[in-house]
Length: 385
Length: 135
Image 1 (cartoon, rainbow over the protein chains, first blue to last red):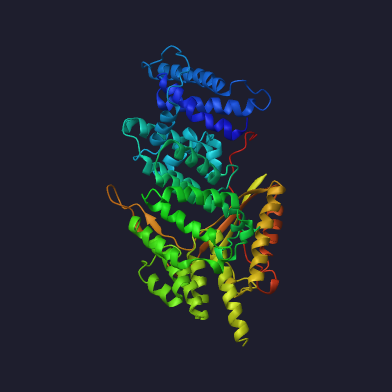
Image 2 (cartoon, one colour):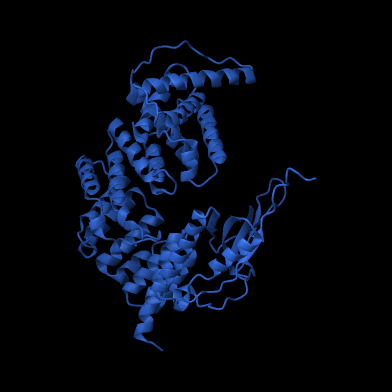
């Protein structure tokens, strides 16, 4: 049994414990203990019934935790007998866990951490490594999150909207440690799409698949960014593209459009172009207009300005950029690009250098510095003085 | 083993020999520089001496406490700040000599014309925990 299969069991095991009367916070700790034991033992000694093994070990861990807690705090803990492993409604239970972990009172970072542990079955160490924080810090973040959920009432969990926002955040984080967060976000979104009948969830899944398909071509060997225009499209994963497009089409025909479907449609149009020059920018601008109807954000307007620049030329793009507030991240970089399209190389080179100093990631800074260097070289070739 | 901090400065370090700003390099020169930095960190990781490396944005604020019940006072960023940290690398090495050797290698990163930039790096030892045996 692979680690992904093992992780898929985690929310079910947690649900079993909660159904037996365990409180959510302690049960979640107990399942984590069982998971860590499974990870260290199953390689050499795999059980015949993995789910049963996890339930038994987690339940024992829960009893130990609950007893030590009741001794310490001298309070009654409800410990029932051991009812049989009911499998009443695994789907509803897991879905409830998603909603609980995306509780609206949780901060985004807490909701993300709790979702990855309780629903995703990742260990605290893996989550800490993925977010580059010490394990003790992540452990505290998770237990604080559980206290918030317990205090705010288990009966008022989040909804599909808050869950989708959490999964979107996880996907966007990419991967830095041993855990591939983008792949994990896709797994959890795929599972969610199987539980709920909502075109937007399908739209989110399609969006993730379509972006994930481009991943092999998106970074240079040294970690630098390869812009869409320069990506080697033969390295895009065609199976993921096909799946993403199929899911999106099924969602779109149901005529309940939302922001994730609109974003996925834009990604699908990019995926559909064999070469960058073949991109259907006019349709992409139309989808950005749709997207503005759902989420009129500065970032959406900024991306729309780029598309307008391609569809109608640099000056039209600059006119669209004028509507984007100053201080929007990457605004200067887009301005540099549009001025370059207009042929004003000197201004473009200066703006690329400013964009580098304003960059919020090292990869982005390197990319903008490289752009400045490229345009400065073009200028030097025109006028070598 | 002892930990040392290598500090890179946007401003405040003595001017290096090869001081052409990055955006005036050719794209190939810039790529070579990025590759050098990435190879350097990989090499230290392989030798078991790398601890951490981070880059900082040039913008920042000064913040201070302003009394009970009041929000903190913020000020800046100050364009004229003399000393501006650009980033750091932390190494865990056997001796000060080794720390100096490594900082010297890092300072030889290629810049304009493919020549070493000779950048000045600030090398600072970490204060350590007290030893167990003191007598």
